[in-house]
Amino acid sequence: MSDRILQLSPRLANQIAAGEVVERPASVIKELLENSLDAGATRLDVEIDSGGIKRIKVRDNGKGIDREDLPLALARHATSKIHVLEDLEAVATLGFRGEALASISSVARLALTSSRDDSGKGWQVSAEGRDMQAQLVPAAHPRGTTVDVRDLFFNTPARRKFLRAEKTEFNRVDETIKRLALSRFDVSISLRHNGKGVHNLRAGSGRVEMERRVAQVCGPAFMQNALHIDVERSGLRLWGWVAEPAFSRSQADLQFFYVNGRAIRDKVVSHAVRRAFADVLYHGRHPAFVLYLELDPASVDVNVHPTKHEVRFRDSRLVHDFLFGSLHRALAAVRPGDKELRPGQWEVSERPQSEAVSGVAAGEFAGQQTMPLTARPSPDSLQQQMSAYGALHQPYQVQPGIAEAQPLPGGRTWGDDQSGRPAAPGIRSEQCSPDADHGPPLGFALAQLHGIYILAQNAQGLVVVDMHAAHERIVYEQMKAAHAAGGIQAQPLLVPVSLAVSQREADCFEERSEVFTALGFVLQRAGPETLLVRQVPTMLHGAEVEQLVRDVLADLLAQGGSDRIAERINETLGTMACHGSVRANRRLTVPEMNALLRDMERTERSGQCNHGRPTWTQVKLADMDKWFMRGQ
Image (cartoon, rainbow, N blue to C red; front, side):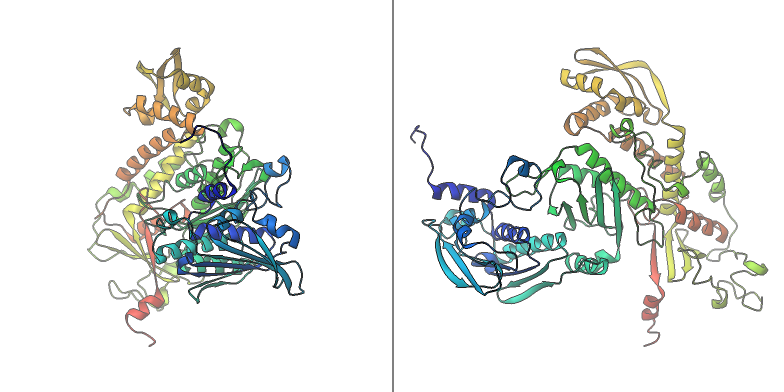
């Protein structure tokens, strides 16, 4: 190998650039479709053969390319999207580097045909990886552009060997089409594979049309369990659909996040979403969502990675807190019977900077700042809760399998018929069922099953409630609210704990000491590389204080904030709630069961217990009719 510095040939330089842009057929389609969208296309037709390895054809109805610009379209660093540095600092297009077509044509046989008008006359430029010499000829073509890519990696056999089977490559292409289809509802998209139609997604701008497309891409089950959110604050807007925690996934395969219309994967976003679902998602499960973040293009850098899958926010902490707060409120505001959240349903207030710096202000993690104003419990709610449920821990003299009758208006009970005569034990009269139009979402209790489940009747049919899981959530939320209302109680240590840290960590503590103070810690710098812990939160007495402080410092250095202290406090409250809630095999009266149902309807996140398990399920009357073939 020579040690002389030589300029690379255009062919070699383009193939090196292709290694950044062209990984497989899916990446080719992504680049071509983004170019079409930037050209103003409202219809995209994609045809592929052999998973895209043999052929990729993309046709659009955009504004097209002038004849003089066609050869430049295949040249490196030639673009119509940025011209000065200011354009690069506020990129509003999906693609802008001007490398995609040059890179694709260097490893495939590419033909680009385009027309700027409706005359039916256009021009075609073609190039092959061998010599990269573009050839321009006239061609018939309607308004728009068609890019035909054949024999991908025909001149680089080593890279072609790394392509997977046809089915695998097609699945990646299909995923790319789906991601792009969710980013632009106003564009019609079709996909054909080996001559067979796969997708035919129609354009639409209304709410109904948008949800129809989301259902086509993510499946109808997603939309049936999805909540629509739309929140705007501090120049940021988050809207889209997030599935209820019960609709969780074993893999993160239904997570679509867009920043200004660009599909991205970002650590800040992922952390904010995970934290919002922390209290309601079963361990090992993943949430499902289709979310869109809109902000000033100058506030986000999209020129971080050649494939533009990653972005960098100018104020990542602001974005993180906004995403977490919006999703946290959305999930907390859901009550049994709710299926939709609209802007303005909850109050969104600007938080002072002193509260936002830690990412977990004293009231935030406990839910005080994120609860709707109408649902905030009073400071003594914990005492009221425990007093109201104190009777649940006492033995009752109730016959097995028979629930006590509940009084009805007029002195009747649920077991009476219209004449006022008592019905047979355990038999409920249909005439005395709750009002189907105005009954509560979880209905009214009928009986208790095996000392574990509450059976209730509502307008839709039968409701089955896991009483321990439901009560655990109720107690947990009440304890968090009471803890937040009373503030974080702290206690001094008899013997301060000395920590040997790096000078960088000690400096970080001095700069962000308010984070520890807000969460009940009192630390003091005793030397260039020594910290003393003098006070800890009462809830964390006996915890590994040294490791916790080190973890918080590591988080502050890495991402500017930390949630570890709040998470540990919530874990402690969750354990206390679990041990303090009603246990299995406790016999409850019907009024007690109804009281539990009403509290579930008023409690945040009552659909899941503290561990993420569902607390109740609905069995519709129509489904039960099918069991017994009624009406068939």
